[in-house]
Length: 261
Image 1: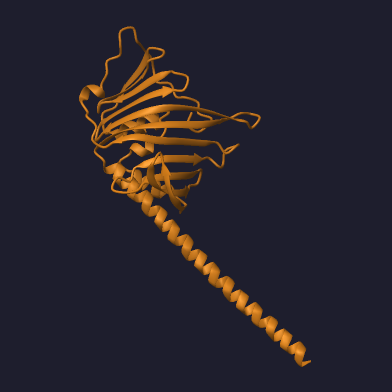
Image 2: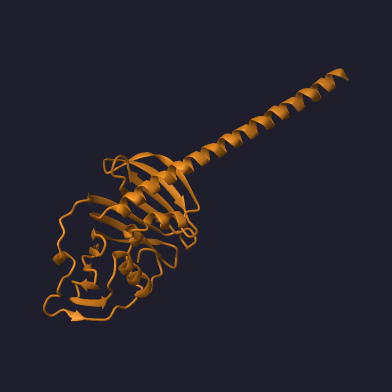
């Protein structure tokens, strides 16, 4: 009887110790998760504030996006965009698709013009205001495509904070030789992986967005290079007269069925 009681007592003690260890481990994991989330959010906030406060910059973005077929197979398309921004009211985006077609977007504080060099056609609309105003009108009112539009916004930090459900710090990593902090964010519609340069200029170096609610979980990615925070700018870079023979057309919103299209 004594041996049975001792066995029961020992078993009870083991259960208590194990339960205590489990609670302690869960508490430690919770603290660790909170710490990595705070670390990730700090990285993202620093990047967003730095970028949105930059008065001008230029950057090259190589990007790709999945087009999910009816049978579930993915096909990647892509393009290279050279972006030139001068706040508060100047923007230029030169786009070259992988098939060789070229287009240019201009905003000079007064009007938005989109020129498709391959077809020699252009569309223009009056829209006085800031870059933020022009981007919002171009994307939301005209229904046009502008990947990474939020990256150009002066409200980038607010936008990211408002869309983030959770975050975590992954690791220190190197992108094209640039030491980075690798973080992950989750939003209501998509997951984001972001690599941000360490040091005095916390600029984004790479981003991957996964649309986990869409069939096939398509991804959009972009890799950034040639960052320049002091590019030479002049008004003529943002206001271009279409070449002779160019045909003026109306803006026509694209029917977007996949991210990045």
